[in-house]
Image (cartoon, rainbow, N blue to C red; front, side, top):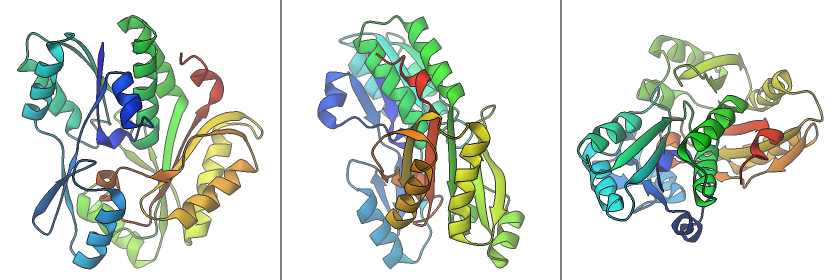
Length: 289
């Protein structure tokens, strides 16, 4: 079985590991100053935020085309028609719909699509589970059942210091965003599980307070001392990410995944200040082969 995903899922596989697991990543696109870049192909996060700072303009992002997915599915079907395609939430990106449209162009491929209803690290955890379970010889139904359990157990929460990127991208109500930016509010943002869209969980007046607010959100979901899988990601804010990691580490028994930059296409919607964390009960992830 082939596994297909997109660059917004922030999975932890190296190129060598991806090849070993038949994992294929389709890049998302970001356009800045009239130039369109494919994430992970011709631009990396550190380079992107440098360009963003110099530009002073706001970026535009776009999902891969249906044709890109069709081309990949067609090529993969030549070796194995069974494909599991796992993507960031359809509530915040058109990627899932593009993947479905691409599959319709390739009748010889048997493509099953999974809408993770989340993004970044927690979406990547579903990709990881799918790839490892498929390599271990699991059947499709058993894999899908595991992905649902992981999706139900995983949470994704974020905060940021400046709102202009979220306002520009239309990912939050324009009026709410303008008011919040005028009074210097830092939002606590989650991803709800029904439609996979952003939901405001609270707001505070300082960025450090917002990072502490993320910790409070974890405490609402899990008793102190719980064994959790945790991953902190950021746009270009390692100091904020390190502070958040330290606060979480004091309160829970953490199985830490690598900290680092999140998908630059997701970061384009939040700006360089964004810090986020994915977390879930470790026992659920112990089922991954």
